[in-house]
Image (cartoon, rainbow, N blue to C red):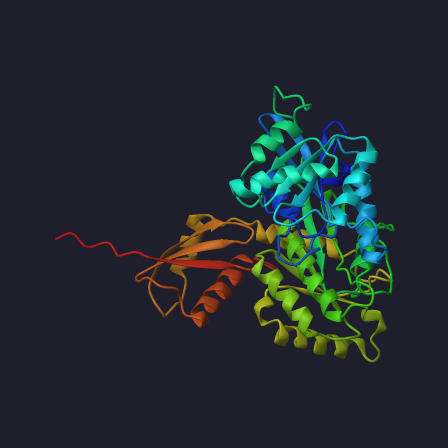
Amino acid sequence: MRCYHRKYMSHATPTVVIVGRPNVGKSTLFNRITGQRRAIVGDEPGITRDRIHGTADHHGRRFEVIDTGGIVVNDHEYIASQILQQAEVALQTAAHIILLVDGRSEITGSDRDLAQMLRRLGKPVTLAVNKADSSAKSDLAHEFYGLGIADIFPISAEHGIGIDAMLDHVTNGIPEETETAPTPRDEAIRVAIIGRPNVGKSTLLNQLLGHDRAIISPIAGTTRDAVDERVSRDGTEYVLIDTAGIRRKGKTKEMAEKLSVVMARRNIRMAGVVLLLLDATEGIVALDTTIAGYAHEGGRGVIICVNKWDEVPGHKGQKKNEFEQNIRDEFKFLEYAPVVFLSAKTGAGVPQLFALIREVYQSASQRITTGEMNRFVEQLRFEERRIFYITQASIRPPAFVVFTDRGGPLHFSHERQLVNQIRKRFGFRGTPIVLKTRAKEPARKRK
């Protein structure tokens, strides 16, 4: 099976790895270089745990960028050691390394340890002194020569200051491309598996793949690298995305829950269809509702998967009806999402997911012509205001512009009524529908 996800890019593409201790701005720099918001940026140290990959182009020089988690070389805590291990994997194939430090603070022991480790690798290393957005701070950059790295660039990742000069140096050995490099086809349906810790995300991933790809552990929030795996079923390609949350040993449950939301939000942005996983043995809890809300707000197709259904005692038919009704009561905003009951452990109900994922993705990608929408409007029974016509503006999620006799949004109840009638006529199973209203004066009759 050929795999095109970024983790397995061709070695012909040079790799630039960003490293540094926690909270120095690595994700901000990654986003600045790649021109996208792939990495999550926040004030809390250590938000990035997995390696994040992206591509960039600087004056015709194309390269891969890897953002690593915050590294503390001599920290023997489980999480810290795992982050270091993941970073070392990226550093092995790096063509150039950017060591990022905080220009607003003094050099720390962690900075020195990390610089020493990088020098031993024998690879080109550039020291970027971040948050140096004033001449005074820029003048302080010379203090960082004590780290033993000759090439130092004061920058501001947030404001873009000094980035071009740094990239001129970093990409100096990368040849300019005379023609656009061919990119692999990526017509696959990207599927994100989200849910709170320990609901069975990794087990479901392995069942969908047909082999063990992800680490499975009874510990909630098992730490591991991000998974981005391609699989083919019935002529359709799927890319499965699963990144579990992480709980630091000995810390509170709140950290695991917070990180599960962070990871879910990242995966939702990357996906076309989201599988929201619930635990049938525990029922619906508050964190499920929070994650479900992010799935809806992300505008992706959603399938609600009730896992561990084989472990529920009693009459399955009656229990299934009760559970689904509970889902509809708790997730009123996901009334469009189909509900499936399965067991990721035994595989029951899992093979049928592929066809449903394809159906939901096609619904989210469906385009209705203006002519079809006009015929729909002619038969529409709508009392709040006069609708002249409706046109579809975009897909994933399907968005429609409704031209009416006056401005302002529709009342919530009338908007829901119109959405339901659009679904009844055109389907759109499993995807949210967005409505935008525009005022249009009716044409005046000629005198």
